[in-house]
Amino acid sequence: MKPANWILIASLYVTQFLPVSFFFMGLPAILREQGRTLEEIGALYLLGFVWVFKILWAPLVDRVSFGRLGHYRGWLLMMQAAMIAMLVLIGQIDGLANFPLLVVLGLVLTVFSATQDIATDAVTCRLLPAELRGLGNSVQVAGGLVGIVLGGGLTLALYPTIGWTGCFLLMAGVLAACFVQILFFREPQVPASLSAAGYGRIWRVWARPGMAGWAALMVIVPLGIGMIFAMLSPMLVDIGWPLEAVGFTLNIVGSLVGLLAVFGAGLLIRRFGRKRMLVSAAFAQAAIILSVLPLAGGARETLLIVPGLVLVFLIYNPIATVMLTIMMDRSAAGSEGTDFTAQYSLYSFMGFLSGAVALQVAGAVGYQALVLIAAGLAVLAGLLALKLYREDRAVADSPAAGAPAYGVSG
Image 1 (cartoon, rainbow, N blue to C red):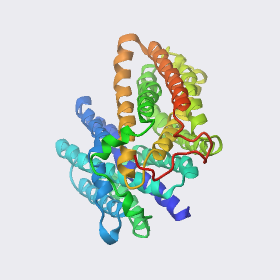
Image 2 (image 1 turned 180 degrees about the vertical axis):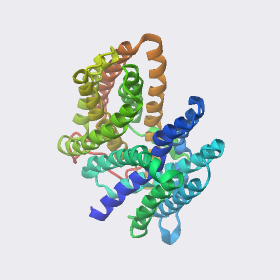
Image 3 (image 1 turned 135 degrees about the vertical axis):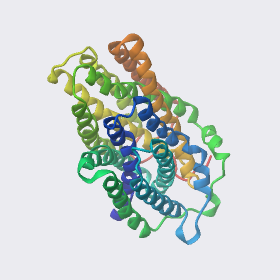
């Protein structure tokens, strides 16, 4: 694949996560400093469910083309331009004083970002042959991490210097650079006979061979590690870490560790194949989750708790890379946006749910019991992965050969 296409894919994933990361990670800190209540700040996190429900308009993205602008290229141009305009607009209002308006504009921005994600995933499916999808999904996950570093870390750090308007204009400038890349992009086409089948496709995705077992796996895999990931911040605060240290460790250092790990995962997927990587990663989660037990027990010694934190970041994003690679394998030509989004919506919903469940479980039985429950769920995920691949040969047993034929409709 052309180097320019790799750069474009990376840029698209960075720019669609950049403003969202600021709303989810940077803005809460600013609002809290301004005296906003936790209940008000919590409204921002509800915006994340847009990414769960984007499946409702994914078939529209698959079906509607824009003539000379191209199909998904047209969507990318429109959504990128819309996000730039929205960032400039938000930068001109006093969002801290008019919080309800800020939430509404944030919702609109998140819809634009999620819609771009549908088109980006579809374009990535078309561009990547089976043997490159592991690396391609490493780029996808890495793009999200870079977006977190820039939106939740760097932009927040610059806020005292450049102010509200400066932060939003800076983000708009980054998106504008990606917009120029899209202008020079030439979208690959698929035969007209493989055109999308409309909203009925949402249900037909799950009727394809092997999808029932795969759906069960998408439900279980994110639960264990997701529960632990959601509780890292409260556990660190409870042992006395200042908020600045928690934010730096989890949002900056953790993202950089995850960034290195996802590219390693992409290379391992290409070397050993989807099956081995998914089964291995699922079981590895259990051991890594147990490494957090000292922190859950209240240990404060750096040498006892930091290794567990590092290990969580080493597995959290790589397992997502493996899962996304298989989702791409199971997406057919002509309905890439719908097929991929249907799977990703289920997977991401379980990720959101795991955080909510973790809070309730930890409150009822404590952190240590939560860790043991999460480890048990990880073992269950590994057993389900083994069972799936004994029954379902739709996913590659080798790095390239044997993967589901891209373009096979179902």
